[in-house]
Amino acid sequence: MKKWTGWRSCLAVCLASAMLLAPLLQTEVYAAETANVQGTVASGTTAELLMLSTKDGKMEIKIDSSTDVSEARILLPETKLSVAISHGSDGYWHATKITYNGAAVGITIDTSKTSAITGTISDKTNGDVLYVDTAQGEMQIKYDQTTNINGCSVLVANRKYNITCARGSDAYMHAISIADVSNTQNNSSSSMGGTYVNGTVSGKTTSDVLFLDTKDGTMEFKVDGNADTTNGKWKTTGTKLTVWFYRGGDAYLHANRVAEGTTTGGNNSNTTGTVTNTFTGTVSGKTTESVLFLDTKDGTMEFKIDSNANTINGLVTVAGNRMTVGGYNGNDGYWHASTLTGERGSSSASVNTSATITVTGTVSGKSTEKVLFLDTNGGTMELKLDALRSVNNCKVFVVGKKLTVTCGSGNDEYWHALDITA
Image (cartoon, rainbow, N blue to C red; front, side, top):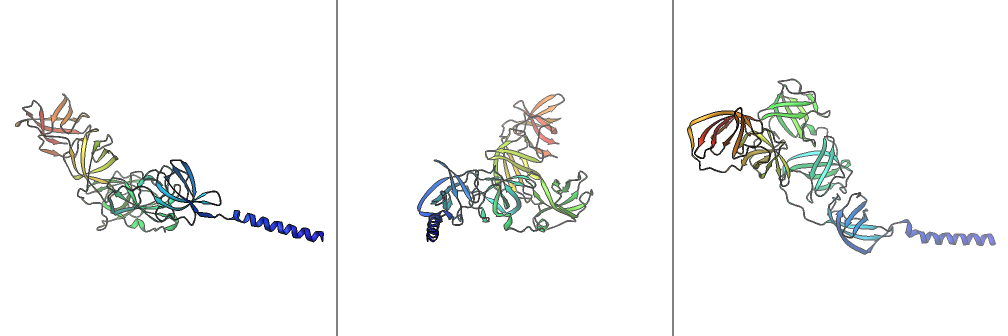
C-alpha cells in the first residue's frame, strides 16, 4: 500500500507541475496591455526583431506572424516608425501594428526607363538612401513610402533583394519595387532587351573594354564575364554592332549583350531629349570636355555634353564657376546637358570689329564666363566674352584647352573675343 500511495502522490505532483509550467511553454501576447511608441529603426534590426531608437532609449520589439506590417515593411536604419506594442508572456514587447511616422518627399521619377539590379542592402543604409552591394559595385538608391515592396516580407539590412529602379529628378536612382530574391525567378533572356546603341568598334577597344563609335561620339563599355558576346565580334575594329547595356554601380556602362548589325525601335539611346529639369551649381574640378560635374546643394551631378548641346551662353567650365544646366534624362541612364548658362552679363562697351587681331593660347584656371584668361607665348591675355559671335570645334572651355581667338578692342580698354576656334 505504501508503494501504491507513493506512486499516486508522485503522479499528482507531476500533473500539478505540468499545469504550472504550461503557460511558460508558449508565448502569449496580452492585447489589453498595449502602448504606442515612436522612433527610428536602429542597426541590428532583423525580420524578427525590431530595434527602435526612441526619445527614452532603445527598445527591442519582436515581430511575429500576428504583426500587421501592411502599412510599413521598410525597416531600414533611420526609418521613422510608429509602433503599437503589447507585452508578451515571454517578457518581450511584441509589435501588433507598424506604420510610418513622417511623410516622404515627392520627387519626379521617370518610370518609362527602368533598370533591374540584384544586390544585398548594406549596413551603411540610412535615412532614405539604400546602399546596395551588387556584382558591379556599390549603388546608392533612394526609396520612400511609395516603393512597392509587396514582393518581400520586410526590408532589412544584410539581405539580398531584386530591385527595379529609375532615375529621379534629383539625379538619384529611385527604387520602384523591391522583392526578395527567393520570390523572383531569374530570367536568362533579360539581357536580350533593355537600352541599346548602334555603332562601330573603335580601334581603342581592349580585351575587357569596348569603345564604340556612335553618331553622338565614342561610348565606353565594360565587357564582363556575364555579357553575351556570342553574336558579335566586339574586338574586331570596324565591326558594326548593337550593344545592349546598363549602368553599373561603379559608374561605368556595362554591356549586357552585343550583336553584329544595326537595331531599330525600342529603347535606342541615340535620342535627343528636351529639357525636363533645370539645375544650378558650381563646376567641379572633375569636369571634362564631354562630361560636366556640377556641385549642387543636393550633391554632385553628372551631365553628358553632347554635340547638340547649346553651350554658347555657358562656355567656361572651369572649377568654381557658377552654371545653370537645362538637362534631360537620356535612355542611357545619364543626365544630358541640353543648355548651359553661365553668369556672363552684358556690356555697354563699343567693340571695333573692323580692326582685329588673332591670338592662340590655352585656357587659364582664372577664366570666368565673363573673362577668358588665355595663356599665350607673350603672357596671359584677358579677353571679355560679351561680344562673342561664334565658337567652332568645341562645346566648352576647360583648363588647358588650346584656342585660337579673333578679338577686337573695346572703348573700355579691354580686348573682346569675337570668334573662337579650337
